[in-house]
Length: 396
Ligand SMILES: *[C@@H]1O[C@H](CO)[C@@H](O)[C@H](O)[C@H]1NC(C)=O
Ligand SMILES: *[C@@H]1O[C@H](CO)[C@@H](O)[C@H](O)[C@H]1NC(C)=O
Ligand SMILES: *[C@@H]1O[C@H](CO)[C@@H](O)[C@H](O)[C@H]1NC(C)=O
Ligand SMILES: *[C@@H]1O[C@H](CO)[C@@H](O)[C@H](O)[C@H]1NC(C)=O
Ligand SMILES: *[C@@H]1O[C@H](CO)[C@@H](O)[C@H](O)[C@H]1NC(C)=O
Image (cartoon, rainbow, N blue to C red):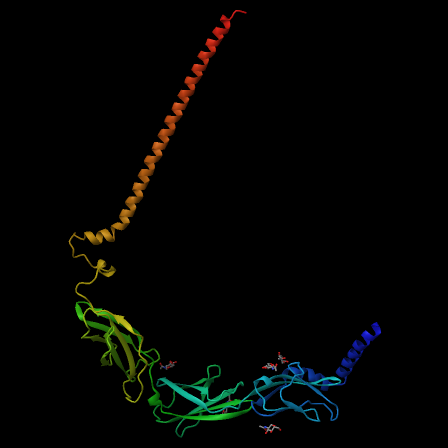
């Protein structure tokens, strides 16, 4: 029996050694197993070659190690034709004849690239960023090659970021009214070129202003002071001025009031006294009215100065005008600490008193106990003496 068991093993080893020594043709099959990738179009008929099979010798195909295959036919020369493939037809296909595995192919299915939808952002005069989305989902890895040019100029590269699917142009020729962007998407099934025409001056859209602050104006219950900075992506030069649009309204109101300015600060003259206000700022290139406004900054909330302000922590710091009569604030702020300190001292005093009472009582009770004991012993000796006297008086 062990002979029967060992002989197939022995044969396999022999076959393996033979195939190894016969040359690289068989060895290549093993290395190909990982690297052999075939791409196909979804919905099409895909043909997989078995490779080294000879006509007439039947072959067997497996899909993901299973004998169950999608709708297919195996030709007389061993090719596998898969009809009208869908996503589930992807995976690993292996072709066997009676000597073993002949070929292994990983099948990936998808679509060739379609046109892209492109949009560009121009946050200042020296930077263009264009991003794109696929109009056809390809399901396959793709590469992109993007170029950019002004009318009548040479193509120059738009530097691609593949993961984020965008590209950047630095220092475009801004004086030219029309530019072209060309993006070529390539995958295993083909490539597609998308062209987009851009008018940079119309796309110019600054980032929103930064460090916006809205504050009350002391002594003026109807004024608000709003300040901001240029967006950091906008050059701080006289040659590139920005126009700012400020809008404000009492909280809950629907109507905005607005102010336009080229400065970095503005005083709202007509706030509604005693009401919380919402304030926002946005910016646009001052020179080109065709360019776009930035997004609005976040809502800022501010209340104008009030004549009788609610006592808050701010007022306490500036109240030296109550000449020694600051009973309330002094009771509420500074002395809290002192009271705390007094309480601590009082506690200590009480503790000391209690302790001394304890010591005193202990000492007194000790004295009392000692005195009691002495009394008792005196009593005992007296009794002893008495009994001895009695014993002596008893006649023997
Ligand atoms: C297909 O083959 C590749 C490489 O040989 C392997 O990493 C993958 O797990 C296989 N997939 C299936 C479903 O067998
Ligand atoms: C796929 O093969 C079937 C059967 O031979 C045929 O009817 C069909 O037209 C083929 N489809 C394509 C897209 O070639
Ligand atoms: C085979 O494996 C691939 C992944 O490798 C999977 O996409 C496909 O659905 C699998 N198909 C079947 C029928 O198991
Ligand atoms: C992109 O295309 C241009 C010409 O169309 C070519 O010179 C360049 O090498 C390509 N770049 C990449 C990364 O494919
Ligand atoms: C223009 O914007 C880009 C992107 O935000 C930025 O990296 C660049 O520094 C800006 N250029 C200037 C001159 O501020």
